Image (cartoon, rainbow, N blue to C red; front, side):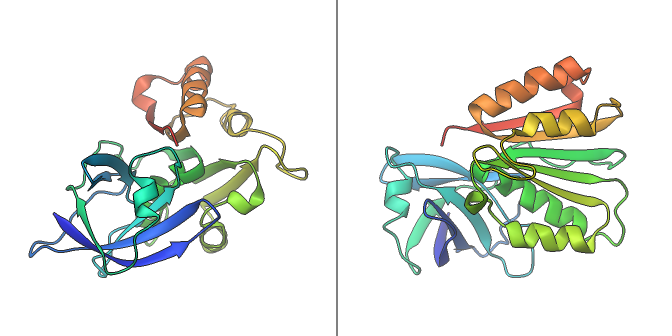
Length: 227
């Protein structure tokens, strides 16, 4: 399937937001949390969809540059109006059919993209049924993607808790990692579902720590990337 690049936003020095318009007679459908694959010059790379579905018909991708990669250097050369080859929406990291417990989203870097889609979808409900936690790890405050939006959401929704965590910057909530945050928040071992997305090392450690806390494989979902 082809898609037109409608708009590109330089989010940080190394991250761009791409807004795509699928060129199909059928509506492009996806579940919050799913991803798609872009094919460029015989190379493929998968990216999470960063927006909840809306009437615009656009798909947003939040992509970090991998200078040694085969796809992102080509994407960085493209301009609005150019055409990309994309797949249908894929992936099983989606919201539960029944929302009957707290949800904790743990991520680093552009791993926040699928969670923005999922949380945005949940916040469209008239009333939050349970608490939502977004624990977002980055190195520096300048790296926090969608920060203003998440802060607005937290201000408008008492049950949504946005917790940015910085590992290389001094100050409150800084010089720490995501693991200490969810271990503290869920020290009571209450029933919850955890979604984890981001750097491979973080995902591996989160799996080990959640298991040590007593949570089982039915209570957490993982998706990792390498850049």
